[in-house]
Image 1 (cartoon, rainbow, N blue to C red):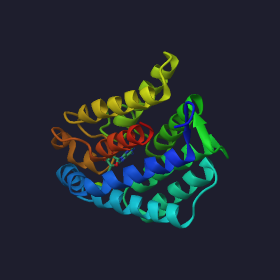
Image 2 (spheres, rainbow, N blue to C red):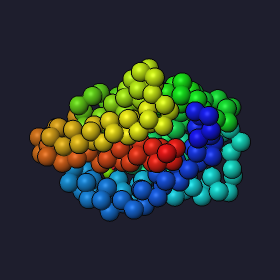
Image 3 (cartoon, protein in one colour):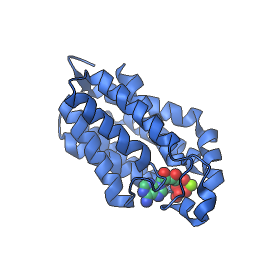
Image 4 (cartoon, rainbow, N blue to C red):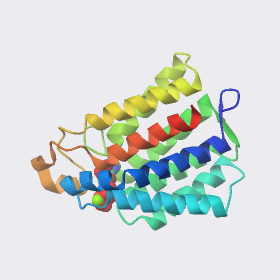
Length: 212
Ligand code: ADP
Ligand code: MG
């Protein structure tokens, strides 16, 4: 953080913290995916984010769009599951919305997050209540915008988005899945947290920790 902006350095710290949380929670996420999917969400995300961090170390980026293009492409190409292209598109759109900036102010970060969410919707066509990552991300982005519109500091708005993502994650438990592999289970998908909503809550937790 520097004067109410998120620097390129903080954005790399965000990715590094997310990679760390994906590695630490690999078994947990895979356990969630074994209940309603094919037991690979933890390994998909841990492998994808490890590949992202290897790229970031080998080829440091000079601007936000460059960084997230690299991140998005790495996830799309290194993760086989649905989550690779979905998170990949999130980061690609996030970066395109930023352009060649080296730091994001509150409005720019809000635009990037909104664009990333739009990418997930464009790819996956999920709506609220479908029991997907959308159910954590959409309330997180809304909470960010509401906090900024209400005059909150950037770090407080990001903390609000992380809290909303966690609430959205928890709210997926009773839902019946209507998208992705979990939808094949029909009513039997109810009673379990959605793995993708859970990793998305970690994504916003990582951002909050990186800028705190
Ligand atoms: P796969 O389902 O191919 O095994 P993962 O296990 O890595 O991929 O990811 C599963 C997660 O992807 C789900 O928990 C859900 O949150 C998310 N997901 C699946 N399909 C969609 C979709 N159409 N839109 C948004 N998110 C989706
Ligand atoms: Mg899976």
